Image (cartoon, rainbow, N blue to C red; front, side):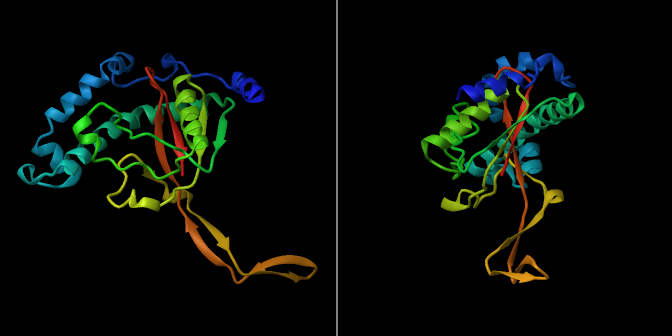
Length: 221
């Protein structure tokens, strides 16, 4: 733990001033996030629903309202997400890469919209103490403005992806083949893996926003 603390001290922190906003004073908007999300819920109209989930207002279900709100909040995060990553690459500072078999993430909408929160499926990415600790590390590093990436597995247990996940973004440009099974033979004095089953693995990125700043880091599954 002491070694980790020492490593974190060497990673350059990102202040709110470092992330240039195109939307004005985003830090001030963070202070009013609770009110903003409630206002967005109250003002969900036919245009918004039509854009997000292609349904007619009077036919919309609670899940339709949840999806519209989730995609709207996600859209607000994307600008900060892009600017954060651009800043990290331009400054070329050190970065924390946190690998974990589990990430026990809470529901993204939290307690902002209680009546719609129940529509969100719990991410089945682990339920142990280490998974919760990993999630807390990601939240804390984003809040401290540390340049960091989380890496894990995108489990599909418990049907949590049955309705899709509005918070993640697929990255097909980074698709890679992964080999499983079968045998290793010797050919010309070298080991060779043959007759494998090939799975094409595509990563999905999820934004990890910091508290009361403009920083948005990434969890890649």
